[in-house]
Amino acid sequence: MRIPLPKQPKAHRSLSARLLLLTIFFVMLAELFIYTPSIARYRKTFLEERIVRARLTALAVETMPEQAADKGLSQILLRSSENYAIIVKHPDRRLLIAPEGMPPKVDATFDIRKNSFMGWIRDAFIALAQTENRVLRIIGDAPKIPGAEVEVILDEAPMRKSMLDYSKRILDLSIAISLFTATLVYLSLQWMMVRPLRRITENMERFRQAPEDETRILEPTRRSDEIGITQRELAVMQEELRLALKQKDRLAMLGAAVAKVNHDLRNSLATAILVGDRLATSPDPEVQRLMPRMFKAMDRAVALCAQTLDYASSAGPTLDLAPFELADVIDLAGEAIIPPDGGSTDNFEWINGVARDVQIMADSAQLLRVFENLGRNAMQAGATRVRVDAWAEAGLVTVELADNGPGFDEKALEHLFQPFAGSARDGGSGLGLVIAREIVQSHGGTIDLARTGPDGSRFRLRLRQP
Ligand SMILES: Nc1ncnc2c1ncn2[C@@H]1O[C@H](COP(=O)(O)OP(=O)(O)O)[C@@H](O)[C@H]1O
Ligand SMILES: [Mg+2]
Image (tube, rainbow, N blue to C red):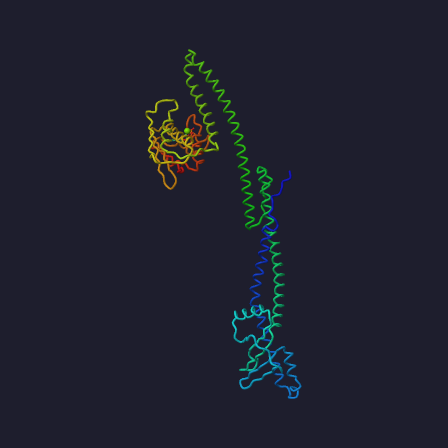
């Protein structure tokens, strides 16, 4: 049989695609953090170099023979240094190399000797943001001449252009790095997480279609990471589920068989009782002596059939939940408890100590069965008095049912709440307590044997309030 694969998320919604985008974003962000100080540094270096070059130009002009200066050589040097003007201020004198015409008006002045880290960053971004050329005056220390300072006047546009070129290079590099990183992240995720996860979901889907099939259980790898743990846990869970299902199937089949046997048995018993009734009229003293024993045995068989059917039906799925007064149900249960042989209840005392205002939320008919079963057990065990008390706290009602019987014997205690196994009574089915517990649990409550001993036993139930 071909099994359709589980639907995978669309490519752009997949885990790896999301991480791919995130990686690109994060790498770009990191690059931005790197770019910011480096563009500031770039501008700083650019300006410092211009100061050094200006100083060299000034040096050349200063040491030049007079006639060379006349021939306009200083103008040529000035132009080739790409500055409008250069001023070198020594402590005692001042050298000005200026064009013949008027130098242009200065738009902004920067002293590169005093600027902070943040100041450099700010100035760099301001420079990048300019649309028009600005004429700048830059002031710096003259290299190697203590106390002297160099001033140059220059255009900002060429510097801005080379800053932009530099930015473009960084951007290209960032894109390349982030694509490269993202691809690596994508591939490793795909390999380490997405593929194994897909394998797990596919397996879950396959398993879901036929949980009894042993071959569909996931074969865990030997990975020691979270995925490995998930795989192993899943495999264990599938195995347990498979066994539980198998068990359940078998029990269900067994249950159906028992119901059928039960039904036929009751018919046979009915016939036997009819025949027995006829036989009982026989005057033969031997028959008269044996008949009551036979009837007793048959009664027990009928009771066993009835209880088994009762148990089978107790797993009924629907509860008829409603709020009601617990004391009413306890009263009803007391009335229903009569000795099995139909004898008198004179020496059995049922004390209902539940206050009138204790309300609970449950299916009252089902709950009645619980108290009937518990009360009847006590009577059968030989108790002459049963007392029921209840109190409410924190949304729960605690009910205690105490008898003065002889206490549980060992066998009953050992198999407490186990179907068919817990009975220590002649003719008992061992279903009474099981049914009681099943009903209480289906109401979300609990039932425990709080204590038992020669002076009596006490059951404690916890039920919900409305
Ligand atoms: N109140 C009690 N006091 C002493 N023994 C009890 C009491 N209730 C139950 N038992 C013991 O627990 C066993 C199981 O009870 P139950 O599940 O109702 O099955 P059954 O009544 O069919 O034997 C009884 O056979 C009895 O030995
Ligand atoms: Mg019983």
